[in-house]
Amino acid sequence: MNVERHHEASKFQWSFLLPKYWGIWIAILVLMIFAILPWAIQWRLAEGLSKLGWKYLKSRRKTTIRNLELCFPEKSELEIQEDAKQVFFNMMLGVFEALNAWYCPSWFKKRIHIHGLEHLQQAQGKGVLLLSSHTTLLDAGGYVSSCFFDFDVVYRPQNNPLLDMLIRRCRATIYKNQISKDDMKGLIHSLKNGHAIWYSPDQDFGLKQGVMAPFFGVQAATLTAHRRLMKITKASAIPLFFYREGDIRDPQYHILLEPPLDHFPGLDEVEDATRVNLILENQIRTQPTQYMWFHRRFKTRLKGQEKLY
Image 1 (tube, helix red, strand yellow):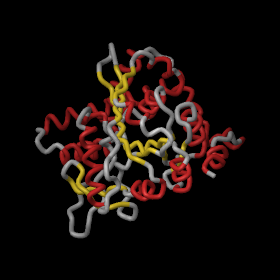
Image 2 (tube, helix red, strand yellow; image 1 turned 90 degrees about the horizontal axis):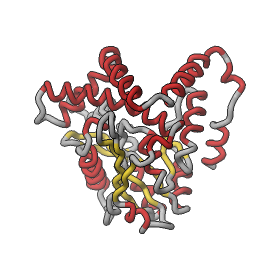
Image 3 (cartoon, helix red, strand yellow; image 1 turned 135 degrees about the vertical axis):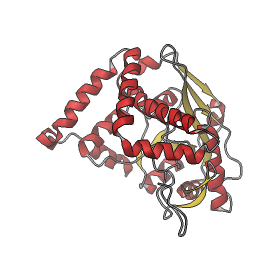
């Protein structure tokens, strides 16, 4: 069972005290200190770290700029550069927001707004896939959503076992269950038991698990596993999006639940993938620089197509 594997992975191991893990322990202590800092200081630190990231994370910078060029061809070179820098800022600020969600969740009090909760309430007793995208809000988006409803999350296990244990334990305060992206039995079990699962089909895992479909007008490898999950479990799909508005003085967090998708999945997996991509695209356009543009969304190309990176 997925629960048993999660319990085992969340256990402390004496080997975590070996010198090879000391760097992670030190980093965790620093991050916990960051978590108790006032928001204004966290914001300023994010600004400084984003400038360092922009300078030294050259591969991420190039990928971010290239993605923005492909998806927003109407923008000038200067606009693309400014948006890319804002993506880096939101990436760094998202780390502090996640820390607040893990260690100081009361900070979000009176800063959260939800729209469309009735769509999820009407699906009570039935499995629901919450179709969403990877934004820089990280677990902060998960936490603000958990203030209104319970749900499971699909995740990719960390390669480092100590880091994996620590993140699992922090996320256990937010999500009802954590299910590995490859654990189809766990996903089916949760959906058949009427759970809602946060599922983000917006990353490139090649064509063994998906099809090519347009994303911001560019052909992209798009996951289709959720179609099979929904057919097996009779679950419904409800788009979920969360984003931040405001500035250093008054940040506000919004959760948007849209109506369930009608006639989904359909008969054609490319049409379904195109439909989901368009939904995610419209969500992302609400706050474009809060999306994780530093991932190589278009790395998979068909034979004869030009490489984009």
